[in-house]
Amino acid sequence: MSILSVENVNKNFGGLRALNNVNLEVEAGTVHAIIGPNGAGKSTLLNCFVGRLEPDTGTVLFNGQSLLGLKPHQINQTGVSRVFQTPEIFDDMTLLENVTIPALAKRDGSFRLNAWRAVRDESKIHEAAHECLADVGLGEKSQELARQLSRGDKRRLELAMCLVQDPKLLLLDEPTAGMSRADTNNTIDLMRRIADQGVTMVVIEHDMHVVFSLADKISVLAQGTVIAEDIPDRIKGDARVQEAYLGGAHL
Ligand SMILES: Nc1ncnc2c1ncn2[C@@H]1O[C@H](COP(=O)(O)OP(=O)(O)OP(=O)(O)O)[C@@H](O)[C@H]1O
Ligand SMILES: [Mg+2]
Image (cartoon, rainbow, N blue to C red):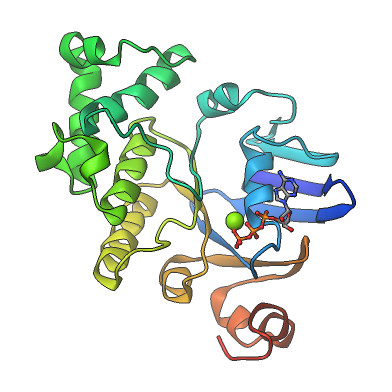
């Protein structure tokens, strides 16, 4: 059964056709990777799922419900959490405070600036935030300021900020970009554990090691169009994909 169903989505920026009749079905309980060259429209597509952008035409259904016209926080409350291409964390807050904010946002539908009070007073949220930090391997650092984290740890913090929302669908835009090989492998393990808990994931990634380690299915975007969608083994051998994605080099 599809948890996310995307039909005929188009998005233009001025004269540029960033998304051209995109169709995508994400099966519940799977990891669905979206790959494609720089500028293919991957982030634009993800932004259409979370309410940051509105498609010009087309439909986006989550569990059969249209997401179009909903505000980002409303989409978030339906069970969709995301990590964007550029980290979005609060540098001057502790890790614990960072994780508390999305927990409150999911619950209340708004960001409350007195997150620190919740950390002190609301033990359930406090506990959940601690648990999620421990899950991603940052339990020891809960009182450190986010700005002090390495790039890999910042990505892990963002994953904890998603997990605390208990998402049904997790959208990740280049979760391992800029990470060391060791951090990347730790992140693959972490994503595998999250997937094994039944969370459906859509992962945009350039790192083929990550893609082929995790994906149940791969959609290939090129110039705003899905040029192939298949299981990893078949994508590897697809001549159109080789050509569009790597200019003829082998995956
Ligand atoms: N807000 C915007 N206004 C105008 N053009 C945009 C905007 N956002 C994206 N674009 C353009 O749309 C196209 C698709 O961009 P997008 O960021 O979705 O690509 P991408 O596949 O995520 O690339 P990358 O792999 O480099 O992250 C690009 O040509 C980009 O320059
Ligand atoms: Mg992008």
